[in-house]
Length: 150
Length: 121
Image (tube, rainbow over all chains, first blue to last red; front, top):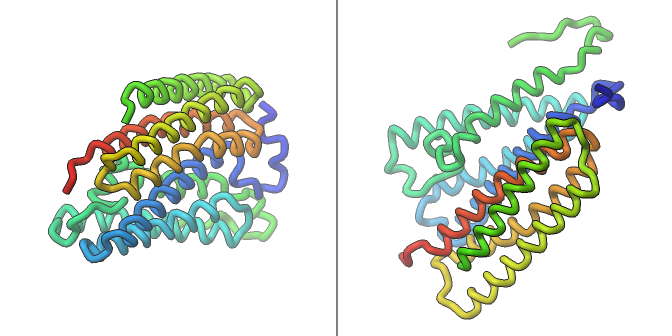
């Protein structure tokens, strides 16, 4: 299968299956940005906490999309960070909406672990982190350091 | 909303999703026939857009018009985004992305219907 014939430098993280991941991220970036923009512009006072979180989620998705799509060490770090923030965010907001529902009169992307979006917000950061790990350039041996864990 | 047309668009989108899914499994990149399929879907969505605008102007409007319009605009942008993606990724993952988008599109149409039919607060 010559599907990765251009993959010579280990910097084409966004190629192949990663492209599908970036597409899903792009969709969520668009969805979350659109949703939070409408919410904040039209009825911010109804649920300021929920809508602020929606905006935060939107920013994280946009950053993650761009970072995943780009090659390079810095982008990888940014992608790792934003996927981690997402995972923490979706779990924290999920728990919070489950335990203190009255704090969230309206839903966010991350409410109830992203139930309104088929739990994709919960799965997505996990896939992102797995993909980042799998696509780690194995040429790291040239710098003399083994692939770090944890 | 014109329910019949919504169904037509959804079925067309699902058909394209199946087709592109099969192409992805066969290891094909996006080819000209796929592009034609994407173009057909875009035309269907543009008709949907025009129909919706006519209905909006005539009234009654849905309670959340802003969200409704933003969904409409997003829907129309999906097929061009698919085409761009297919050109960028010249492997089987191009059709895979298109298949994914064409699976999401009917869900967006369901949301569009829900927003249109939402009870007035």
